[in-house]
Length: 217
Image (cartoon, rainbow, N blue to C red; front, side, top):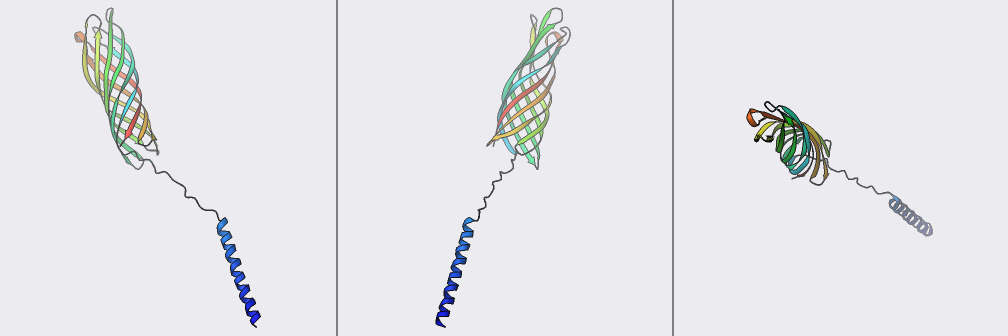
């Protein structure tokens, strides 16, 4: 009887040891789960400051007594301030900028005269409406445009005016790294009519294409 009891205890101990070893082996070979990192959705809300630069081309008309027209073109560069509010995927924004500009053109006008129209600075204050596709935001924009228009008639004189008008356009902005975003946009600008010499006036209308780099706070 004693031998049977000892044999039973030995078999039980051996069974427990075998089960424990098998359980340890199963745990050792079980693959571990890795937690996948999911980047947070980008949010466009907040203020920003930046720089912009590009070029423009357009058309200016001169009225009598120096009737004529000129194609204009040139570059511009300046600074930008803005603020965005994001609601779901809709982004509402206000943006203002001021640029040094050298958009100009000249042509013959009147009876053998030469006329020139030049925009030497340009600013806008616009509303923006965008769609937030995570780190990309296409948008439309429009509002007030203002700038300096200088018109001159060779041998007669010149006149400089600060004019206000309107602008309308659109673009796309993308988050590139940390607080930095980059944009590419098109604006149509109409500054209306500016007084020129001897009772004439000059129009200034231009297409603006420019890139920008913004820092968001």
